Amino acid sequence: MNKIIEHTETEPKPTPKENEGIRLTEKVRRIADFDFSLSKEQLTNQLPFMAYVFLLVVLFIYNSHYAEKTIRTTNKLQYELKDLRSEYITVLSEIMSESRQSELAKKLENTGIKELKNPPSKITY
Image (cartoon, rainbow, N blue to C red; front, side):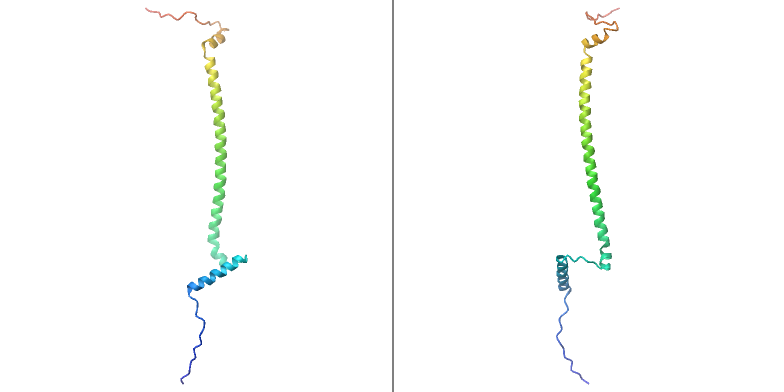
C-alpha cells in the first residue's frame, strides 16, 4: 500500500515583505485610477484618523480666525492710541498757552483782579 506521491511544484507563497510590495503597487494603481472606494470595514478602521484630521482642520480654522481678530483689535487700538496722543498734545499746548501770565491777566480783567506791576514784598514782624 505504498503509493507514489508526486510532488508538483507550486508557486511559493509570498513572504510578508513581498506581500507588502504587492499591496503597495495595488494601492498606487488604485490612486492613479482615482479609485478611492472604501469598504465598510476600511471606513470604520479609518474613522479615528478621519476624526483626528477633522479636529485639526477645525483647530486650524479657529486659530486663523482668532489671529485675524487679534490683528484687527491691535490695529484699532493703535489708531485709538495715535488719536489719544494727538489729543493729549493738543490739550497740553492749550493749557500751556492759557497758563501764561498775560493770558491769565486777560481772563481776570473782567473780574477786577489786576496784574501786579511791582514785585511782592515780604512782611516781617
